[in-house]
Image (cartoon, rainbow, N blue to C red; front, side, top):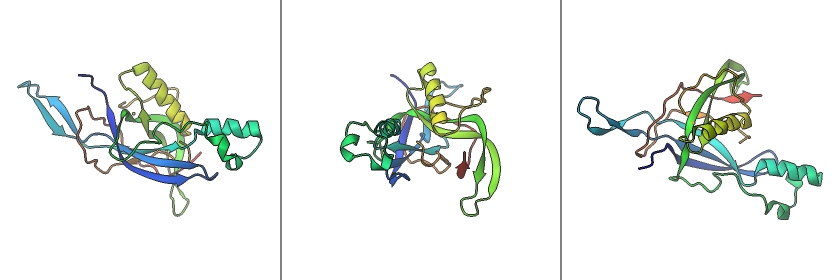
Length: 204
């Protein structure tokens, strides 16, 4: 049986960005169960593990294509004619619903340092050099998945540092953030674990 890592959609929020472009804030989680083989008896058992959660944004109209169209038409994104938008495909994930599963992982990596800002006071709480994001794709295709990790982190405004501190294998309105609350589902995939990262508002 082909084995991969899966993420399950646990929440979907519909929002608008500052240009009035629709996007969805999609929360995904890793499994809280995994199958392991007992080293002594060689029996296979299902054990509980701590699930991880994070979120990513998916736009109704791909933002890169929107930006290109905006330049071509010499008009602000918010003022692009609706008819012009029909040919622009949505981001992957736009059609995901709560309960759906998709290939991918939650990845934590060392990135260019950035500040964690208190949402209420606006004060800088601390500077960190780790970032966590949902990276969608087949983790078994290591070369391709590594490229996807780099693209995802760069797209979120947190490019990887030259010297990576690699943990375990994982769009631009709010930063992806990790939630330590438990997921409520069970699938037969390997769970991931990595250094926990708490994220508030990020300055770029």
